[in-house]
Image 1 (cartoon, rainbow, N blue to C red):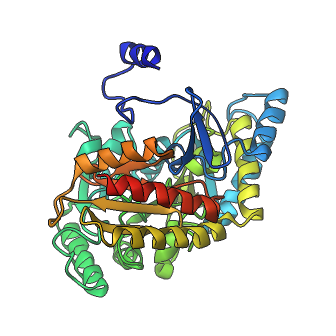
Image 2: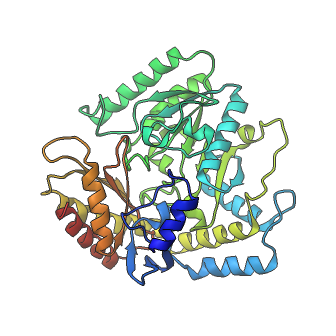
Amino acid sequence: MTDLYDRHRAVMPEWLALYYHQPIELTHGEGRHVWGADGRKYLDFFGGILTTMTAHALPEVTKAVSEQASRIIHSSTLYLNRPMVELAERVAALSGIPDARVFFTTSGTEANDAALLLATAHRRSNQILAMRNSYHGRSFSSVGITGNQSWSPTSLSPLQTLYVHGGVRGRGPYAGLSDAEFTAACVADLRDMLGQARGGVAALIAEPIQGVGGFTSPPDGLYAAFREVLAEHGILWITDEVQTGWGRTGEHFWGWQAHARSGPPDILTFAKGIGNGMSIGGVVARAEVMNSLDANSISTFGGSPVTMAAGLANLTYLLEHDLQGNARRVGGLLIERLRAICAQLPVVREVRGRGLMIGIELVEPGTDEPNQPAAAAVLEAAREGGLLIGKGGGHSTSVLRVAPPLSLTVAEAEEGAAILERALRSA
């Protein structure tokens, strides 16, 4: 592995992050487990950053990929593509957006980039409202709306971005308020922000649960309250469902449905889990918005026959096996188990999340100060114990991110919780 690590460092950028002091090469997986090049087996509680949504080596998906690849691998969007149309029909119907149109991309970054293009073109404005602590991708435009210093390497942007309060419930100036007071304060902040914006703002983009930001979220209904204000000005609502979509939260199929009182979003972006590891992203928008571009556009790789076949098979499996319900049941058990474990650990400030999207925030004992060394130590100790997890969290990386495939069993949840308990106690 040292040889491969040395080769990696010789040809890859220094800013391309690797987990662990001794990075591991994953060679294969099955179900909720993966194996390293050294033959060691790991329980996977991160799924390639919430991407292996159903299971590793899911037979239905691998069969669909193989069969499609044996027919035709690539054609581009210049030709009719049956798998793309079929997946678009299903996604449009599931989105909750009326008269929906779907455009496929190859990643969540590209999906958010396309959503920003649609919103700014439709509204004839380059002003975007984004949430503090947010993350929306690594392209030039999506970095420009990322409210997280750790993931925003430049202040240059084609957009004028205004940041709004509300994405983080437990920290910041409104943390001590009740849920109703918190929502009211954030709405007042939004109104004040709009009073400072010149001309018409194009859109608000928000993750229902902030992923890289440490699985933080506002009280249910906040974005519904925001939408009422946005509607007064004709401002679009973009919901970034790259990490929250497809039932991962258990309670809802999409994260925006926890904020549905004022209706569905104008634009929805998705990626990660739908491909179960294949490169799929996309944008759903009502026809009026999607069709507002007045220039030609195609996609060379978005909507590839092979990735669309994988997405169709994966979505079918997810729905037929009620993996959203499994995320709700097993995720509920896991989060309660982790809360019980962490209740007596001074290093843990909070265990939060929904379904199989769980964050464990670590602090310096007796304070609210983020504890990055502890997070790094727990990540290493969990790996040594046979468990892979992630980390993230605002301007620090002091939140452990737990997001297993949605087919996780109760026994695997208990096993992972036990490994995490040992790792946390060693921090």
